[in-house]
Length: 179
Image (cartoon, rainbow, N blue to C red; front, side, top):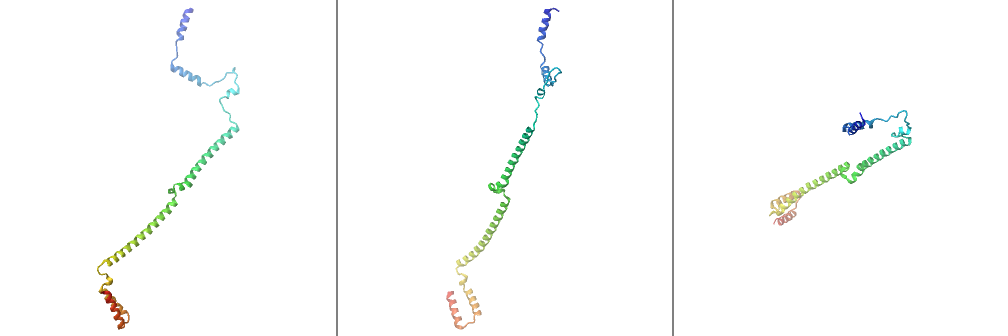
């Protein structure tokens, strides 16, 4: 092969490109390969542990302190919510207090009983009033009825020892009333 043929072959080979899948697989394989220095390369402790984080005692306590503080703050918030629900909600929402609901129900029940007794008394007095009004509006009230007056006169005469004058006076009074 002469020089011209070699240059032509190199130019032709220079145009060859790898397939996309092959490129990606090769790149990932190269990146994932860990670095292992050879005996001839100089590796220091700092370069070998560059990606590692060393924890010190102060870091450990500060991390623990932060964790305890976050947990304490969370508990404080939960305690405040509990206090607000249990202690303060009856002040703002009286319907949530069971004891007050029971006391209010008892009060309403006693009020209803009192009102029912008033209704029963009103019914009784209305019946008595209606009877009295009927008697008054009748043409001849029963207390001026002659038969009732005669019956009462006989009862009085039978109870009281009568003298003729007293009995005559009573009879005159009763006759005057009946007229």
